[in-house]
Length: 320
Image 1 (spheres, rainbow, N blue to C red):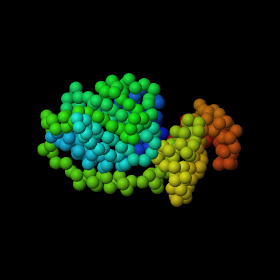
Image 2 (image 1 turned 180 degrees about the vertical axis):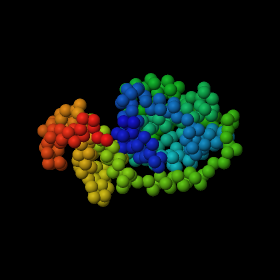
Image 3 (image 1 turned 135 degrees about the vertical axis):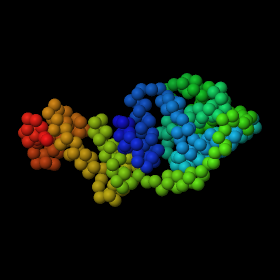
Image 4 (image 1 turned 30 degrees about the vertical axis):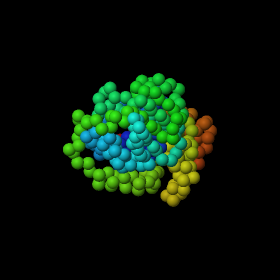
């Protein structure tokens, strides 16, 4: 749950759409919390095409591997904006490339790794568990340990070797019949096109932007540093762009931060087990003096007096 909040998200986004930067924030923060090497491979291993709706249906609906991958290329833009896959054949080699438009490849490394791992897993589901590529290349920097990747893919893995992710395998496998084909099912391409248009029109703005900022601020306060540039990066925006969006809503990142601190301060001061210094730290202040001055400005009294009065008003048995 902390990883979702750090990315400015509820546990289950109501519309099912989030920015790529938020997805990366969730995965990267989770990896740090869990301390798992090659966390992208762990996530990909747990992914199930059957639970990916129309995208999963597209990937498993062809009578051959070629048809499945061509269907995937058609469906992917409706699942992830700015993403594309291209199937190419040159001589005896086939390659499936996955590209994310815009941004820094190193920042998107988790997605590149996770998508490649998911695709290889899915192809193994179609072709048999013994299927392996002959080479996998990534555009981002090399991780500390490459061995887990080579063991997972069953092939050499290179980093900073291409402008996009490339999975290379034998072209002779493309037209082999797939025993578990679901080609009799009708792909609803109209729905995919509708989903693609919904992605294109999605914008992190208005109340959604404000609520996302508030969740990120709450997490940043606990970590001791509230930073506009960091919050903007988490949401896939530049600091200037985010301030411009917030200004249009007649607020600012600084105002949101102060409001969250004011609200959280009242909540924390109601806890008799917390000292003023602990409340100040929980609100992201470097020392108690800064917090005391801010609280006096907000409420016209020091936090110790406010805390004592709140407990007296509540009485010995608390509020009913």
